[in-house]
Length: 487
Image (tube, rainbow, N blue to C red; front, side, top):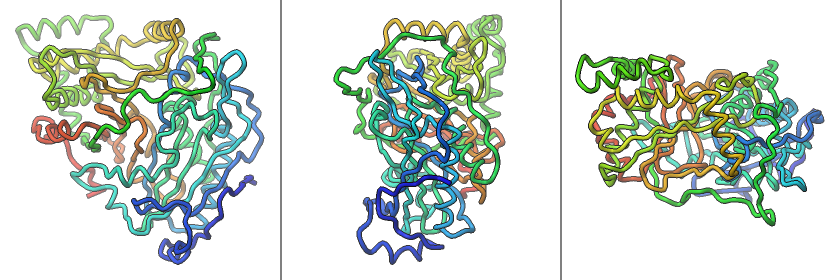
């Protein structure tokens, strides 16, 4: 059985949120203005001792020490079991999931030679139960409106914790929040120097599989895909890094839904070759470029549309300013030999595409998509290893942010199994949402559409005036809709 050590007094849960309310009239663990109140906190350890030793942070892990912990979670329909039973089920299955992925229950340790390792010592994680009796799913998933970040931020613990803090704090924390209409949100916060998005969602799937009584996929904890790097990051006096962007800069956040039909239309436009003129010559060269795999993908077409529209919305950019589109790429299948798809850790880099404002204004979706396509196609084994070698020659933390106001950073992936495999036993998730971690002007995250039909959701963070201009852009907004299951 799981070993659970309560660090706070427990509040008994009842079959319905309304039944809990009388219990909350006394002191609460946490009662923020959002109306989301933490009523219990448990410390959960793996239900079996770890057989894994220290895991050295790799050349892909170490740069993430200055990033916030990842904060992602899922809304679910109301379960058909009492809340006390739900919390107990989630906590006990979490203990078994941590036994399968013991690194997430460990801590970061800096060794005498300055290497930083994950010590899989079963130190445990925090598991919080919260209630929001005055809120419903409709308060969070509002059609044609910004994400209510003043609410969503309290769906996650460890808000804006920097990954280096994993030396002193849990590497993961968990919160289940029960809304007044019975809907449930399960949020996970995970150290970004320990996991990338692929590993994050592998663990989410693992927890869900165990909760519904199935056996999870085994992960690969080997640390040899870049060889034995001797590069280290030194932090004198144990003083860790800070994030490299202004966390207090004003932002608006929206989740734009693009239907499968809209994406097919953009892809068809991106792959339509012009019949003559200068553009025909450019596309002809692209077609014969050995680095170009040919067809432009659906996601590259969508990203091109976003790049064009956001650049138009950034009214203050000069025509000769260079715009940059950074796209996170999964290195697992790009390396030779390929890394296991279930490799646990960070295996991501950033494919960079640039163009001036005037170039994007003069050209169309096909041209912008072709640029993105060429950058991603060129990001193979050689490019990955060159980037790793450059980092080892000059180690440093990853510079997240947008210092000149002209960058788009696309993270996450519409291929991650956010809906697929995350049924905990009472129904498929309804929607994905994230916390405030790693949000800045131009930060975007791709989520798969819930329907599984090729639709995509893009979470977009922009300054208020840029977001307002984007919403007035008819060329962009013609492709945006609202998921039918949330209407």
